[in-house]
Length: 261
Length: 126
Image (cartoon, rainbow over all chains, first blue to last red; front, side, top):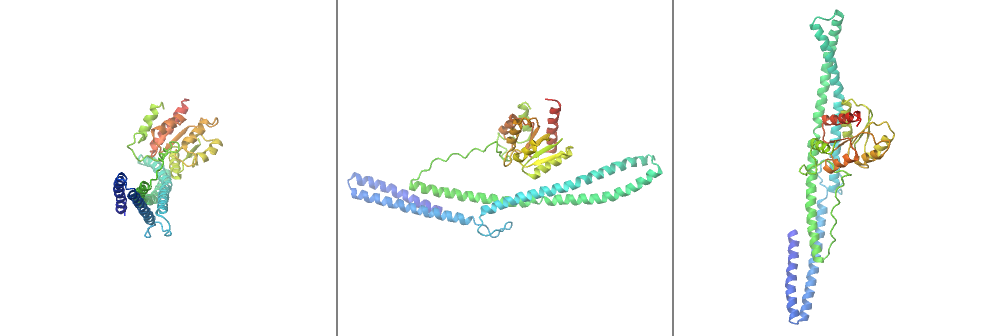
């Protein structure tokens, strides 16, 4: 389709060049009726080419809109068919936020539940070790020995139970990392969509540009996109090549110390 | 020692809260941006402020400036914990009177070091 409209435009350009030559010749040789005829023809060619371009533009828009329709085989978000891929992409990215947030919270829940267990084991083991040392030194009274005997039994039982709990918590943490796979897939899809949309937009701009050049419409230079505001923040730095962005804490510390911190 | 943690992501607030707990600071309060942090600060009793930069509503740098301009609040130590790492931004934060700057992703060691350094300075009376 793109090639077709290019050739349409080329043929108009060709007609215009030829027409201009004819026109000049007619005027120079005083054949004004022929000159008028040439102008008329050129005008018609211009209209025809213009309408053709509008037709192509409309078709491009239609195609682009149709292409943006949601995939019915969407496995993650099932919405009604009218929903656009952009809505879908937004949903997908929200899903990434939900997944990562959930994974982080579950992981931290598991850690919160494990930390005191480990602390408790450590404390009991230290106490026992102290008394165990005294036992080795044969420094225990019979009452203390009986107490140690009981405590050792409790400790072994607790260790078994606590280790089982820790093991299960660690497994939950491991499983929770599956979010990386799922969110990775979703983000890849959204990235593909963005690339796709960009291509289509570039094409639309090209078509619109041709319409402009035929119809003689001129646009004011658009102002450059407003520079991102430092105060509003930029989010995490992705491009580590940028010399204006520091890439780690050491560089930040160096900068601050150069400022007298 | 009561610490206010300001970050729009609850996960990050929780991470910081847990790290602070490990460092022995158990008294923490949370806010999700500058706008919600200010009334908490103005109510008094906050001894230390840890804030993110990029937040909806009032950002961390705006909060920093407001706090430094407020007679009652201006002496509160402020640690910025943020993903913002542009040279100009760090300079702006330093000029606005930040006490420490930690870039995300950060380590528990880095956070501990910066907090301790801030307290050393305060105890040193500078």
